[in-house]
Image (cartoon, rainbow, N blue to C red; front, side, top):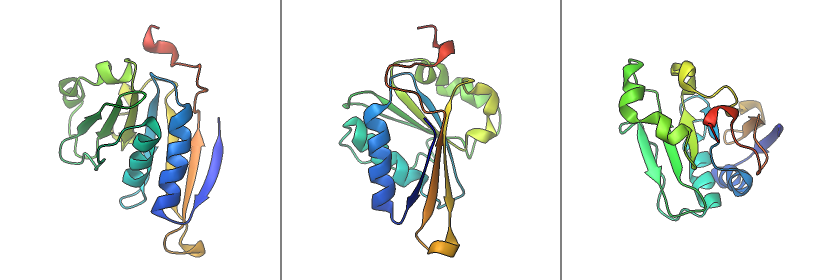
Length: 155
């Protein structure tokens, strides 16, 4: 699935993310791209809600990885902004997340692109100041259908 959506508020971003989460299959890895303050955490909150996760979702900037369970699928929320070295990815145990039954949202994935599955989906959030201070453009590409899983998961 490839789609572009305009969002005029954090709430709209969260609703759109929740819609996507309701259809996502387990084993999906999503590159979540956008500048600081673009709305990545709002997207993650909505995505978690769409999976049925009730606990609060915050940016894992300092913890690097935050896990959420209790929904339809586990959610693994990565923030790679502060990673300095590729060895840190191994320390996180990323393979268990990327190749398990949950869904991985990876902020700042461009910092460690060699670790992502070839078929990782992408969500890019950009500001559209010409349309208003709160307007964001959300571009989704490579999103799998509910029955799909990434090809290199071994399943």
